[in-house]
Length: 207
Image 1 (cartoon, rainbow, N blue to C red):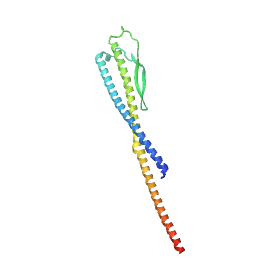
Image 2: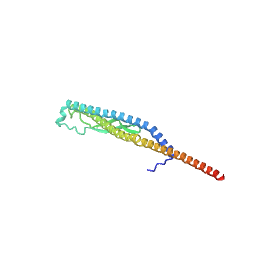
Image 3: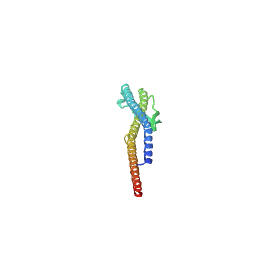
């Protein structure tokens, strides 16, 4: 780090830096508040989707106990074909959003399979949709946690490092300039007295 110059140019520069830091800090604070609020919403969304998934899973398992027998092959009957995602820009932070899900159901004979396979397929569609929403909600929450940490570090940098340092530098420069001004006044007075003394001595020599 370069040594601080104790002059008026340096004072102007440090004053400009301080003004810029103080002007930029409120926007950082606002951004942090927005991120924090959205993080709280994302956390609630994750918990809500977890509850909905567990509740729906329990309902399906309770209404279709025959699934546990394993006599009817169900693996791979309902799978995710694709997930459509969107994107939200929140104060420069890009967040994923859930749009839709495309589910693939293997063809099966209505006569060869028992009647409860249809509600099973319907239930699995719901569970897969909820699972996709869960995954994106958790991803969204993780991104917001990281974004909040980054913006908090920036706010702390301005509040605890840059602004205090600029203020210290300004105070130091002003004190140095004030001392230099006082020294200049003292030197001028001394010089004036010496000049007056020499003039007096010259006049006495002429007598």
